[in-house]
Image 1 (cartoon, rainbow, N blue to C red):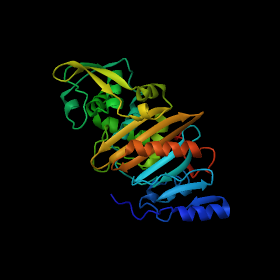
Image 2 (cartoon, one colour):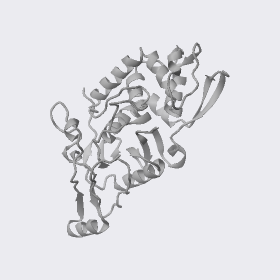
Image 3 (tube, rainbow, N blue to C red):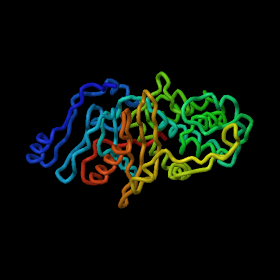
Length: 323
C-alpha cells in the first residue's frame, strides 16, 4: 500500500540542523488524506496539531539517536503513563488493524463479562477463518478461558464466542464503536470483534495507542496479555486440552515487555500494540501495515523511545477518554 510521498530525513540534513540549533524539528510535508476526519467534536485534531502531518514526526536532539527507517505505513511511540507522544509516522492514517482490534473488544467487554461465568458454544462460533482455539458447539467454556484464547492465541472463534456471550455479534460491534468514541479514537471503525479484514474496518497508530493505553489500566487485561502460555480446555473434535502460546514473542525476546497484542491479515499485514517497562518508564508503541520484521521494528522503536523519553519535546499527547 502506498501512503503518498513521505519525507525522508537524511543524516546530512539532521547534522546541519543540529549544529545550528541543537534541536531539529522534523516537520513533515504531506498530510494524510484523512487528517480532517481525525478532528474531534470541538474541531481540534486529536492529540495535537503537529500530528496532523504525514511522514515522520519528531523533535530530535543531539543526545538521541536517529529514528529507525521502516516501510511500515505508520507507527507511534509514547510514554504510557504521561501519554506524551515522543515520535510518530502517519499517526492518523486509517489502515486495517487486524487482530489488534481484539484489544478494543477487550476494553468494551471485560467490564461486562465475569471471568468465572460460563458460556455454551454455538455453531456460529466456528463460522470463522484464521487462527482458532477449537471451540466446539454444545461444550461449556469459562469466560476466562475464552479471553486467554482470544488474547494469547488470537483465536477468532474465541472472539466470536465472547461476542455472543456479551449479547451477540452486532451488539458487541456496536459496543466496540461506542467505546472507541468514548476513548476519542475517532479514526477507528469496528466491523467485527476479531479484526479479520472487513470493508470499512480501520484504525490508526494513534488510536491503537489510545485503545492499548485504556486496556492496560485494567489489571485483568494486563494479566492476560502478560501471560506466556495457557492450556485451553476441550478443544476441537478430539475434546482435548490445547496448549497455547502467546503470539507476542516480544515477551520472551525483549526485556521488560508487558504486552499487548499482535495482528496479521493479508490486507493489514503486520500490526502491533506493545508495552514495555525500563528504569521506571513504561512505553507504548504501535505499528501498522508492515510487510515483515514486526519484532525487529518493535525492538528498534522501544530502544529509541527509552533513549528519548524525557529528552525530547513531545510531538503530541494521547488524550484522555471522554468523561
